[in-house]
Length: 200
Image (cartoon, rainbow, N blue to C red):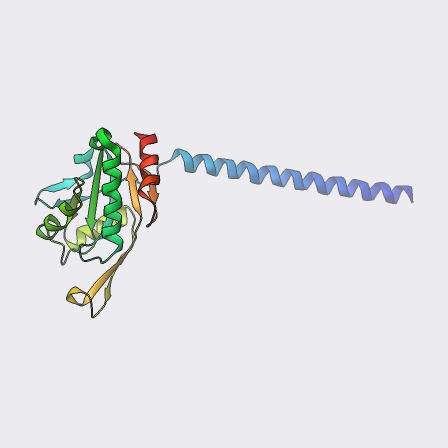
């Protein structure tokens, strides 16, 4: 009987040891994955598009500055103007540090958003926002690089009979054009501003 009891104890100890060993292996993998995620930039901003003044711009034109990038379209009824108003509040709140940040609005509606249309739209927010557009192929290439989602949606009541569905995050890129952070639609300007102040 004592031998049977001893065997049970040994089986329990062996099971516990195996559990601890597996847990340590999983924890090591988790820590390695976390370290890799934290050390590597998920992606870099890359684009070659035409600004609202008719000049070609790439990410290299903003080297040395932080970039606040938002994708949208000028006929957007709420999300885009609301977000750009938040960007304007952030830029105003930065004071002298605003010179270190370039806000950029990239259109995902090249059919309607010509440089002329952007030239009428972006200055309304009075924040030095750079409006960028391009051909359908250029916008598609840019969307894959970031990456973001967008699609044309038929809507009879919208201008020209369609609207655009799109990613509504505001992206932050560092002075080397590496991804630094993103905020979902509706994030208060104060929260974005606090984050930016810590970084720059």
